[in-house]
Amino acid sequence: MRRIFPQIEQLRIELAFGDTRGLPPSPQVHTLYPAAAAFFRFACPYADCDGDFDLTDVVVALAKGGVLTSRGQLFCDGTRRDRLPGHAACSIRLDYRLTSG
Ligand SMILES: [Zn+2]
Image (cartoon, rainbow, N blue to C red):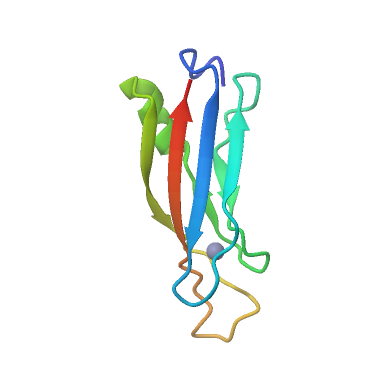
């Protein structure tokens, strides 16, 4: 990550989830350091879902723009294998907030 984003010393990634069909999973906080691999995919919090959220573009935009925070929403496009066919689309909402320092 240092090689790709030399201006970022630490990156805090806050993930909150929203699900219109039930209680959403717990929020997550990840702190990444330059020594860590530049890997910004986070698995969907539902264990039976095959989806993930790719924040790579968001991190790249943050680094290039020289801004300190970035927030937005993504929706999971994965499939829940424990659900009935036809109702298996996950579509959980992710509210992300990235803070660099
Ligand atoms: Zn999912």
